Image 1 (cartoon, helix red, strand yellow):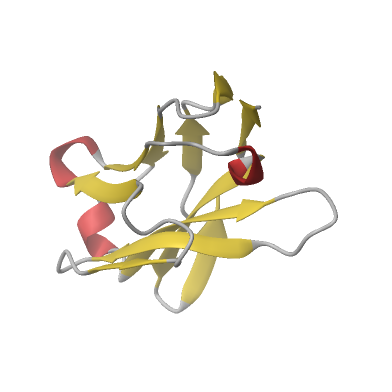
Image 2 (cartoon, rainbow, N blue to C red):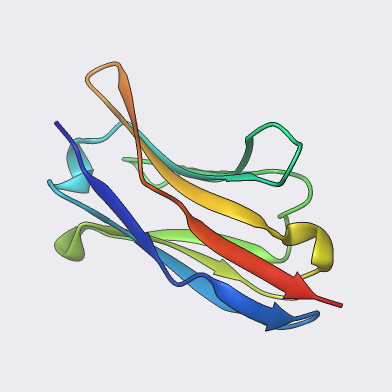
Length: 115
């Protein structure tokens, strides 16, 4: 089993920044991929950014140039640095991990960007 705990969400003004953290209950190097997803009210959950165990990254077009995903294996933590936030970034952000062909999810953290 894998537990993922997100933190770092909150209320921020347009143009502001937040850094989300996701702490895993086991060594994250064992995960094939870790990612950040988000779900806004009335919308489907969508991928924001992902990072592989080898360090390769992938971003949604909406996140490119503004968000950065990174990992700290020693702390079993994956981060999402979000800059130049916009009202349309408002959503619940979820951390995910792929481990032994299973997907695990955190409980989510709310990000609200005011205009």
